[in-house]
Structures are given as C-alpha cells and as structure tokens.
Image 1 (spheres, rainbow over the protein chains, first blue to last red):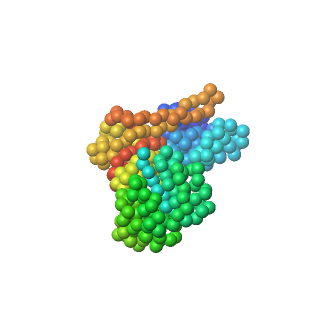
Image 2: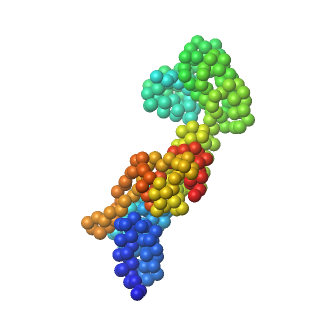
Image 3: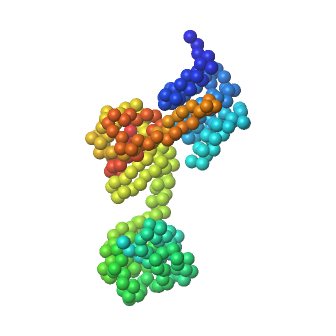
Length: 85
Length: 228
C-alpha cells in the first residue's frame, strides 16, 4: 500500500516522539518525494536534525519551513535558538 | 591559599592574572609598563611596576615565597629566559612560561621552566579540532594525558547499552554523563525538547542517536572512541 503524504508526516511525528530520529528522517524523505510545499514537512526535518545535533541541516530545514510559512512561530523559535548556539 | 606572581601584563598575562584573582587566589601582577600595572590595580591583590629582569629586585620582592610564577613577556624572549633563570635561582618551585616557538621552549626548559605554554598554538589546535569535528562540543584537558570530552555519540555505538559497549574495559574510558534532547508535543501540535541529563549512567543505560556523551579518560583512548 502506498503511503500518503499525510501518513508519512504522521509517521515522522510518531518516530520523533519515540526518539527514533533517523527513522523519522527516512519517512520525511519519502514524503518530500510526494510534496515539497508543506511547511510541516521541513519543520519535522528540522526537529529530527536538531535532536541528532545535526545543527546545520536543522537550520536549513527550519529556514525552508519559514520560506513556505513566514508566520511559523515554532520554526522561527527553533531556528533562533540554533543560531544562538 | 595559593599565591601567584604574574610577570608581564600583556593580553595573556593580564587575562590570567584576572582569572586567578576571580578564583580568589592571591595574585601579584608585575610589569615594567606603568599603564599596564594601573589597569590591574583593584583587580589583583597587588600590582607593581618593576623590571623583572632585575634579579635583586625579584629577591627583595620575596619571590621564593610564591607558589607559582607565570612569565608572559610577549615578544621579548631574552627577557623570558633571564627571568625564568632568576626565578629558579631564587628558589621558586613552579615556573610557567609563555612562548611562541619550539626553539625558545627548549631553551626555557634548559634554564628550568617547569611548564611551557603556547597559548596561540593551543587555541589554534583547539579551534582546528572543533572545525574538523563539529560533533565535539568541548574538550577539557585535565593533564597532559587525561581529559574530558563532550561529543555527540558516534553512530557505531548507538542503540546499545553501556553494558554492551564495555567502553571502560575495552577503551579505559568512563562515560560520566549523557545529555539527551527529549522531544515532546506541545498543545499547539508543535514539538519542543526538554534536556535530560543522566549523571553517572549505568550498564543498562542505552545510547540513542543524538545523545551527547561526556567521557573521561586518557586522551588517546578518548580519541579511539571518537573515531568509532
């Protein structure tokens, strides 16, 4: 059965909360192949990379999320925190 | 309480004098330049204008009563050598000298310096190390051979317990703490992290991707774990 974009985002949410960040990134990469215009996709990428301490990738992902939704408050907060570090 | 004398109040000398003073040590700061000495007044226990190459003046200062001297004479290598020699002859037990070159360090050792420091080189090496390995957050050198490193756990050892890894037996390295970002979902559906610190982790504690481990051990052994 083909996963839908929404399923994959939900799966990535589940993996993130289960601290399986690499699995989350795999799901998000699949989702990205379906749709690249959803800010939540890049937000979740950012969260997973931030958890892995891959801060460059996390910053880039949050920037992409903000490009798609400049009012994405949480993405901005995460990005600001990572820039301070 | 330990007593320090800092000779030469350039950038390095004044910084170390201030740092020692902040740690509540008694510090005598010495320089031939009146302005530099004035800047240290009120910061250290005592700051005096003196030509430290004058052995007689050093003796009158009761230099042998100090625990440690830090000689930081900047470009004037001859002065560092003369002062080191005088300090050792006057009976000072521990003399630390700042220098920039390997050749000077050899001469300084010959005249009795107990420790030579190369601040610029050490800083540069530390910076190069952190640029080369962005996964290292910090490294504290406890001695020439032992240190504490804080780094992101290498991929090869994630999803294993400390008991399984046997880092202490295999590498003679102790994991003294694990720092972990634990994600949680907020009411608005976004995600944030709370920092969890496991101090003195046991054999059943598992390392997960993204964990930061703080390890204590011989530098060479820490390096082996880092390269896993």
